[in-house]
View 1 (cartoon, rainbow, N blue to C red):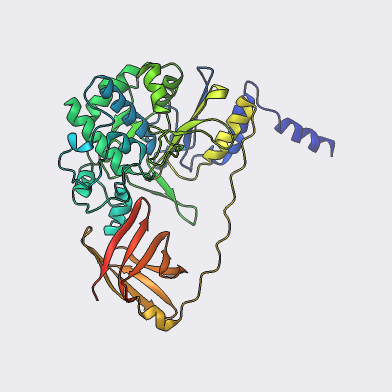
View 2 (cartoon, helix red, strand yellow):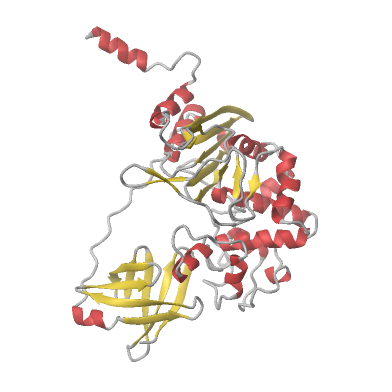
Length: 456
């Protein structure tokens, strides 16, 4: 009996030379310590020093290559803050103005009746439709590639905005892709060349790249994986060329240099770093918790700023707690890594703080019942002039189905009168003065009120 208690006590003591932080993270990520799972790298900056830098799991399952701080991977939307810094550098040089109409730099953008400023692109308040959701509505399926030039094509063929610029916040990758094009045009350099010359090299980020053409190869890059329901991993491909909004491949070591730039600015200086953290203000005077490609204000009860990133199977999270002089960067090659728990452990060990619990999701209410005869009135074909694509609404037994020739079918779950949910998409049917159905509008994922006219 006593030897069992003694064994438990021994196992609860960190290994010789191992810090409490490393011990807790090793314990949390124990399932990734073998040679059969994708992994991650974790970096911690405390009082200006890198106090933790370690990899877990594998960068490549085929060759059993370890995921290390030197492993290259896509950081998704964490890249947006680099785009924001580039616009500030160009503004300081007098080559662009944040308050200027984007049509000054992108004259092919239509006149939507209200001015879209460069700052609106940075704040996600432009009203421009989100490219991923729009392409999904048009028939794109997971794995279909989105090219950099698709952003301008989408905007130039749009007939309306989601809302008047500055009236609301709606996260928009399209906007940051347009910013990359603006940076290219006003600097006279390809986007990647500008970023390398003015940001990456200045910080000695020697293993950081922009994927500017499909299938580009970078040395030491982790393979992207997704986990299926049976626990097996499959490769998830990134075959896009999105720039400005993402498409940035880098190492943990390089990102720690960028993280330290917020504390001791080399690129941008204190003035531009401070400007990046100024929250956006809407037309009605409301202040957002988003600044220039940074979420600002609060993270689970603690003052913080940062951003998350997601691309294919890659994930990343950069987070800074100014009051604790603490910065954290986690980057992975699979979605299953418990990033929130990693952050919790770091803050508890080094910041000696307890973060607020994550709010629980409230159960949904029971949907209303719609008689079969009434369901038939919704059936028909619906066409989007803007997307040049059609959907069918069909009646199947006691419910409606939304069908697209590439995306397949989705059950329409009633929410209220003429309002339905289709796998997270809000479907709002519209009627004329006599009550006849004229069409529907789709909302979701950064697209609002996309019009589909009923033609049969």
